Every structure is written in C-alpha cells, then in structure tokens.
Length: 201
Image (cartoon, rainbow, N blue to C red; front, top):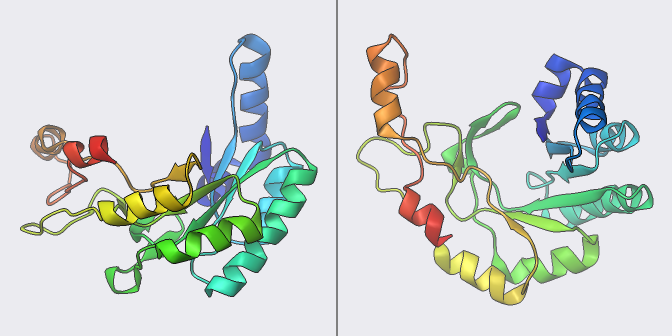
C-alpha cells in the first residue's frame, strides 16, 4: 500500500498504520506500507519509526551531490530498522499531491549518473524519469506522447537486475473520460501514457 505525504497528513499516520495492522490480523496476506515522494529526512524518519516498511526519499529537486547525501542519510537510518528505500534521479512533470513540477523544470534521468547514485546511496530501488508524468493531464491535446526508451534501456544495462520504478506510468482511458464528461465531470483533455508504451516499458 502506498501513501503520499498529503494522504498521510489528511488521514493521519496512526490511522493508516492501524488499518494495515488490522488487515494483517484478519488476513494472511503480505503487505508493504510505502511512503511515496518523501520530501526530506524528517518525514522519512517519522514513517520508518511509525511502522512503514518502505519509504521513497525524493531528493530529485536537489543537486546530484545533495541528492546523494540526503538519500544516503535516509538509507542508513532505514536499513538499521529493516526498511527499504527508493530514491529518485530526474524529475517528472505534472501534479500529484504535494509534488508539482512544471514541464520546464522536468528533467530526464542521466544514465551516466545511475551507477554512482546507487553505489553511493545504497538505495534498494530507483525511480527514473523517461517521459512519464504525474496526474491525469500528462500531455496536451495534439501532443504526441513519447517515452524515452533509450534512457530506460541504458539504465537497465548499467544496473542489471536492479529494481527500476516509473512514476506517472498510467494510461487514461478515453472511454472513461467520455463517461465522466457525460455525467458532469470535468476531465476534458485528460491524456495518459498509451498502453502499448507501458507494455514496452
């Protein structure tokens, strides 16, 4: 189960953890509780101390060196508690909860940085930016969706068998957009990632 920082504020950390504990008590199912886009060490630490089994530290808005330093600090703390960590290199455009990155400020992952980042931070998985985008309005009308598979291929070569994460990798079915519009919803121009591109990725 993934929890954004905004959802955690809205629903309350204790309620979320207790819901998972209740599910575990009543069902024999494995559950991971993951923080999505943790902005700083403190929120990651709070989630780690409060029962989360996985956190994402999103230092992608920092310089490469500062992102490494912040991510390594979270990893060192998390691993002492048996918690896994996802880091991020590159920035996705779009809006999702507390994450708001304009198209002008988005940046693709540089494959030549991934090995150094992973080795210096010790992250367990890596979110990369290849053209996916947060939110339902990923592309403007008339704009051709494009994922940079060359970046994904190169990262995969440099980090063989390492878990790669693609945020914002969702389609927006035009059939459902039409149904929403017909029933009074306002989702005009909602365009997602084409499903054939998602399959390829």
